[in-house]
Structure formats: structure tokens, C-alpha cells
Amino acid sequence: LNHYHFCLSYFPSPSLEPFKNSTQLSNIRGTMRYPLAASLLLILRSKATAFNSFSSPLALRKAFIDMGRGKGSNKSIASKRNLSATVSADEASVPSSGKSKDVVNAALSSRAITGDTLSTEVFGGLPYVNTGELTSKKQHRVLFILGGPGAGKGTQSEKIVDTYKCIHLSVGELLREERKRGDASPHAELIEKCLVAGQIVPVEISLNLVRNAMDEACGESSSHGQPIFLVDGFPRNYDNLFGWTNNMPEYASVIGSLIYDCPIDVLEERILSRAETSGRSDDNLESARKRFTTFQDQTMPVVQALEEVESMETKEDGLSKMHIQHIIGIGTIEEVWDATKAAMDGYVKN
Image: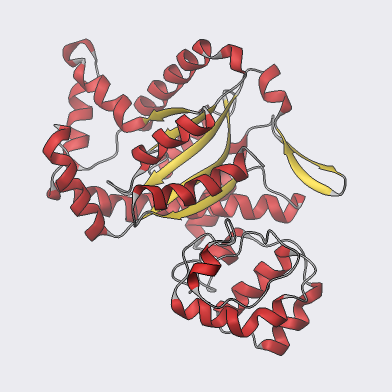
């Protein structure tokens, strides 16, 4: 349970009845961040009565996390009714040993990533994030889309664009287009070497391409207000994260990130299938494995740092201006889309 970071998001009804089977449970949209394992279902069956007594979903999330770490029993969980409503992101996403100093330091250095335009306010006793000033200041809302090679970032981003009228910017595609310019681009040769070797392109090059693309796209859609940009494949490492934090908050506010989690065997199968038609020089097993290793070693610490930023803001203000959402990338496109849509509703519709 700890490894898969199970975390209750919210309950759509005031009470939680014991569940008889996994199908019945899966019909409750948005209840869980992840599909349920059989072991979790058994736990929910035995704890349902105790869960009913909680006064807030956040207190329930806290108790559930403690239970997943083996800290709770029926009696001890039921006694947690008066817990604080604040649940930090690290409690939901990392082992009880806590985050490394590098991750915490990276988070402290990245607090400005949400910009100074978003604000947390309260209406009718409910906290919310006010994005009203973004339009007047002509700043963009940004969602980072992260995941290993072949995790489904591009496919799901297309469906998000169709449903929520966001604008998809794939950093990888921007780099590949820049590479195609050949001698017309001073960076084409360096980009080619990085892509084939599974390495990360210098942040200055990526940010310049992203900012230009955002400005062009926003100019085309200005009549629809400030759009949400899906920045696909960024930030990939601490250098990317710090580069964005130091250069982009004036232009964009990061409201969160969708993280597509997928094991390497599934990624390899998808890469081989995609290679038949993509024509991409990096669509091969060797490059894919290098890219997956890079994702695990360099990008996942960035994800943890973003989660820590969310945790810090929640502790200080009761609500973070940024929310990190993990999505299991295994399954059919439509199954992954169901989870993606539930996450996007939290950012946009709700």
C-alpha cells in the first residue's frame, strides 16, 4: 500500500457503506487515486464502520494513510476524528522515513513556481484558489504532464485538449521540430545528440521554445481567455525545475501536475509498437531504457519536490495553489482516460 501511494481524494456521499465487490467500489468516481488491489478492498470492508464516524474527508485521508503504514486498528482509527484537516503531500506519497534533504531543499528553492498571481481565499467556509488575476496580467495556467517514455502522456493530452480546450505543448515535440530545422537552428545538433542518448536537453533551450510556443498559442486564442497549457515532458530534472522557477513565474503559474505511472515492461511494449509508424530515432529499446532510467533517477525526485511544495503550502495556508495527481498508466486508453478526466475535473470543472 505504501509503495503504490494509495490516498483517498474525497467522498461524494456523506457516508461510506461497506463494499461487496470491486466493481461496486470502482463505480464511485474520484474516490481513489488508484485502482484498488484486493488487499485494500479487504481493509475497506473491515474499516468501513469506523470510517463513517469521520467529520472530514481530509481527516479520513490522514487516518487511512496511517492505517496503510500499519499504525491503526479499528479503535485507534475511530479515535482520530479530531485530527487536523491538513494532510501533507509527503504523507500520501513517500515512505514514513520522509523525503531526502535534496528533495526538501529543491522544494524550498521552488516555492515561487506557482507565481504571485494565484491566491488562496475562502468562500462560505470553503478554501479555493483564485485565478482571476491571471487574465488581467495575461499570465498562463500550466499543468506539467510527466511520465516515462510511452506512458501515454501524448495520447491523454490529446483527449484533455478535446474535452477541456487546453493547449498541449510537448517539450519533446518542440525539440524535435527545432532539430528538423537543421542548419537554421544553432541547437539542432545538440538536441539530436541528447535525444538519441536519452539525455536531457539544456534547460535554456527548452524554456525558450516553451515560452515562444505559449505566447504564439495564447495570441491565437485570446478571445477565450487565458488557457491552460499542458506542458508535456517538463520538468525532467532539478535543472529544469530551477530553470522554470527562476525564469517562468512572470509568464505562467503552475497549478499542478499529472504523473503517469507505468512499469518498464509495459513501456517497452508500447515503444516497440509505436516505432513501427513513428519514424522517431529514439523509438527503440536501447533509447527507451535509457530514458526510463533517466526518468526514475532524475524526474521522480522532481515529482517528490513538487509534492513537497504542495505540502508546504497546505500546512501554511490550509490549501495549496498546486496539486500533484498520480495516474496509473496501465490499461486501455479509455481506462486511463477515466482517471485522467477525474483528475482534470478537480483542476477545471470543479
